[in-house]
Structures are given as structure tokens and as C-alpha cells.
Image 1 (cartoon, rainbow, N blue to C red):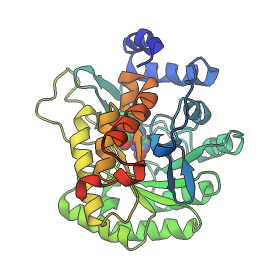
Image 2: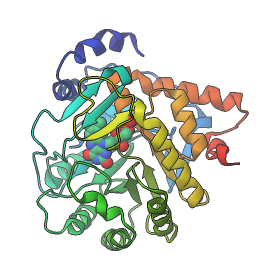
Image 3: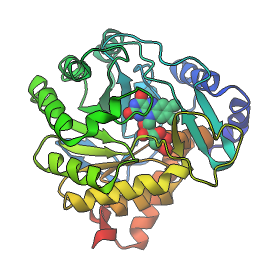
Image 4: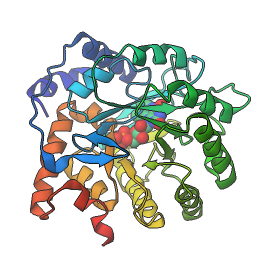
Length: 346
Ligand SMILES: Cc1cc2nc3c(=O)[nH]c(=O)nc-3n(C[C@H](O)[C@H](O)[C@H](O)COP(=O)(O)O)c2cc1C
């Protein structure tokens, strides 16, 4: 953790969470957050889908929903930034409060409900970017949409040439009925339609952690049939571990952070098994330090993402993870991160 965040972090956490998030976005836009100096470490480099990632650590969807701070977050040391979820039309999301910290367990519960500036605004921001750096675009559906699948298709068409990869996110718990699209047949149809709309795009699917083994087997089958180029595991959970404490533990929404690490890594590991290690996986959920990150790599993740860790550890977390990953690779005598991917399965 940087000295600055040691001082500022506790102050930010005195503010209501959404206010603190707004302040962080504002500070990033103004260039007030010091940019870390980093040497590149070739052992951490990842080549995937024809893209060269300097290292595996990316920013998960939800932090920069409207594409306001893509370049500042790349400057903070992330290898890639995922914008979104973006809905075709702007929508306000659920009423506030809708974001809660569970400090004792380094967790967050959110029921934002896809608050989005909408595709037009976000597309314009991406069109006017000048910095290089890998950007993903996470697609969502409008709450009042009659045809959710059509929303993803529209988003894919719109963003195919503006992002390095697209994500079909059918795993957010805060839009009623959305997760039903993870079922085998609806999923197959949805992904085929999105593929048709953006045939040249790299297409990823983001799944929930609350899936049964049967669900996961079905998803793996669809994925192995070539419906997508990779899977992001996982979104937030609607489960509540029994030992959760704090006055917000009963809030409705998706839980992220430390208590999600175990179940999301489990899903990641199962997907690696069910796809025989042949489909690139992005591991996300509960990464609070470099050892968590390394555990996801060994479980099968080629790339990683985080969000909640930033709330508790600040932006210095990215550099800490990169350093720790290099140490763990050396200790396990791996010459590169790709050698460590899925090591726990061998
Ligand atoms: C406040 C908040 C908003 C989020 N919004 C989205 C979203 O719009 N789309 C999405 O796919 N995931 C969203 N997520 C989920 C994260 O991308 C990630 O999958 C999840 O938080 C687990 O990672 P973490 O434990 O590192 O936070 C959101 C998470 C949080 C905490």
C-alpha cells in the first residue's frame, strides 16, 4: 500500500461508498493520483488473442462504468481496463444507497443495477482516446428492455471497433431475470447473435459464481463449441457466507471482495477442468493481494481482474501484486506466468 493511500484511504472510507467512488474518479480525471514508476518484467507478459498484455492484472468492470478514466487507470499500472457494463440507452440504476462496505471482511455489497451513461456517451469517449493500452467493453442490457438479447447485439455492433474485446455480461445479480440467459439454450442463441453482429471481435462471457456443476458443464459445452474466445469467472455472489459480520451484511445485492475468493476460484478451476484448459480464462473475485492472484493463476487464469481490492488497498495494490507474482513464479521455478497457468491441475 502506498504511503499516500495509507493516509487518504481511511479518509475516503469515512465517506459514503458511492461518494468516495465519485471522489476517486474525479481525482483520477484531474491527474491528482501519483503515477507509479514500474519496470516491466518479461516473465509476467501474456500474449492472448493477438494482444500483448504487459502483465496479467486488469481492472474489472464496474469501476469505470462510463469510460471516464481508462487512461488514468492504465497509468496506475493495470495492463488492461474493462469499461462498463454499458447499456444501449442511458439509465439511472437502482435508488441509493446501493453500495455498502463490509470493512471487517474487506468486502462490498452492491446493487447498482447497471447505472450507465449509455452507449452514445461511452462510445464518444472511447473514440476520442489517444493513449494506447488494452480496453475491454462489458455489455449490459437495459432494465426496461423488451428484448435483452437485442441489447447485447446492439452494443456489440456499436463497440466492436472501439474496444479490444467485448464481454457478454449475463451474470449481474441486480437486473431481474438477467442471469436466466446463462442457461444452455438461451446462452447459445444469445452468443451466436452477438457473434453475428461483431464477427471480428474477441468475445468473452462473464459468469456468476453461484452456478451448479450442471450449469457449469452446460456453459463449458457452449464455450467449447467456439461460442466465445474466453470466459471471465466471476461476477459478484448472491450467497452470504455464514460468518459475515457488519451491519450491512443483510443488504440485497452482489457480494465481492475477500469472501468471494474461495467460491469464484472454485468456479474458475471447474471451468478450467471442463474446458480441458483450452479456453483462456480471466480470474476475478476476491483478489486482495499477490498470493490471491497467484492462486487464481494456478487454478487456471491466464489473466486477472480486480475491483474491491482497490477499495481497501488503494491503487498501489496493482504494483504489489505484480511484484508478488514475480516472486512466486521464481520460487516455483516457472520461467513465465503462462507456465504457471493451471499448475494446480497437473
Ligand atoms: C460496485 C460494483 C459494481 C460492479 N459493476 C459491474 C458491472 O457493471 N458489470 C460487471 O460485469 N461486473 C460488475 N461488478 C463486478 C466486478 O467486475 C467483479 O466481477 C466482482 O466485483 C468480483 O471482483 P472483486 O472481488 O475484485 O471486486 C461490479 C462490482 C462492484 C463492487
